[in-house]
Structure formats: structure tokens, C-alpha cells
Image (cartoon, rainbow, N blue to C red):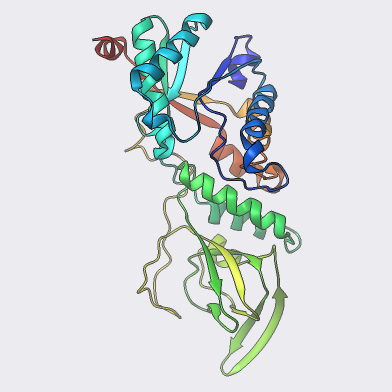
Length: 345
């Protein structure tokens, strides 16, 4: 949208609902009664940051589109498209991006509406599985710093949301968990394979080296700080152990997927990760249109950050190179005219 708007195109965004049934992730922005109004305002602000001037919001209730008669929803979309007379229409693919029923319903209705009009080109958004590992990218970023990273509770919340959303949308391939460790738990052990990067969300830990029966404490870490980056970045065994000094909660990012019966300690399991070249899996990449939007990445990130009620993050808190890998290219499927003819019939 930012790319086309910058080229002088008239870009319209049509949203079927106001998102009033969504989760409130920042309690300072909205309450349930006001969330629809707040999210509509966030949508308009995000579009403004992309250079999109025209936003149309329909009056369907969030979370109910799968229950709306398909012909009725398609007729509503068709009326809007007839008024706009677009050259290109973009909607969700059959998977609704990540299985969201509203997305699936509006994608089907839009496909039907475009088929009836028999004029615009139809593109469907496509999200191929990206083999990028957040854990590895963040670990490399942390190791390259001149001093140890010191975050905050807000940073922990932001990274948790960022990681969960990124894996949901298949921008990254990590396993994302929030894990609670009771006081005294050894979270990682010196010498074992480095299979995860941890961010402390609450509590504190002690980092120590073992030399025979001796134990040498290296440092104490607390909320907003990482541990495990050296092993993940270097694909090396853990250089030290980490134990919980009180009850600890961590965001755990793992390039590889552990099982309940994985052993611990030296030699327990070989370090293994998903491919890390950052390119989508070619076996799943059936997109027919690849759009490089890195020139407009700043606008795209500002648009993401406009959705404070759902996505309260500061994009400046993450490595720029990682953001370019994740958000710098977009993929679409072209729907051939004969497929739209099938919709009409």
C-alpha cells in the first residue's frame, strides 16, 4: 500500500469490522466498550502513515463474519467495489493468513464480489513459511553489542508479542514459549547444547561456571535481560549454567523444537536448528508475485506500531536487519480470470 501510494495510486482500505472483539493488550488505550472505536482510529492512523487516504469501515460485528450469509457479505463488498472501480483488489487467501474465521469469510466474499464485477485483477495475500530464526538473529545482535543488554518489563512484553505474532504469521520459524521456573531450578547447564535464547520476564537468575566441584558466580541477571545468546549465536555448547534465584518467568525462543523426553547435560543432544537463510521455504512458496517493499519499510513499521491496543511495541527496539528480513518482501497470489469465471458460475 505504501509503495503504490508513493507511486501516485489511489489506495482504499475496506475493513468489514471494527475489531471490537479483539484482545486488549494495552489497558491504557481502551476498555471493552471503547475498543471498536479505538481500533478504528488506530486503523485510520496506520493507513495515514502508509499514505493511504481512503478508509471504509463496514458495520459487521467482529468475530461473526463466518456466520454471515456469504452472498450477503459478497453483495456488501461488491457495492463498495462498484463505487470505487479499482484496477486491483487484494484480499486474504483461503487460509485467512493464519486461520482466522473472519479473514477466511471476507476473503471468500471478496473473491465472489470480484468475480461478479468481472473487471479488477484479484490478488490474494500469501504468507509462506519463513525459515528465519528470531533466536539466532537476536543472539547475534546481542553478542555484537559492546556491553550487556539491559531491557525492561515493557521490552519483555513487546518482544513476547512480537515473537508470538511473527510465528503466527510465519515470518519466523521459532518455537515460542513462556516458561515458569521455581526457585532453585537450573534453567540451562554448562556444556549442554545451546537450544534456546531466554529473556527474563520476572524474577532473577544467577550465572555461574562449574570447575569440578567448585562453582564461580559470574553475574546476576534480572527482568529485561537475556541469557543463552553466546551458545545460540556461536552454535556452541553452553559456556555457563543459569539457575533461578527466586521464581522466574522467561520468554524462551528455540530455533529447534524440543520434546518432553530430551535429556540434559553434556552430550545429551546435538545442537540443531531450522534453516536460517531467512528465505521462505521454496516448497511452500507458490506466490506468483513478489514485491520488495524495503524502500517503504519505515512507513510499514510505523503503521504496525499505530495499533497500540493490540500491538504495543517499539519497533526501534529490534535489530533493523531482522525487521528487513521479516517485513521487507511481500507475496501475493494472482487469481486467473478463469478462476473468477468459475466463481460467477
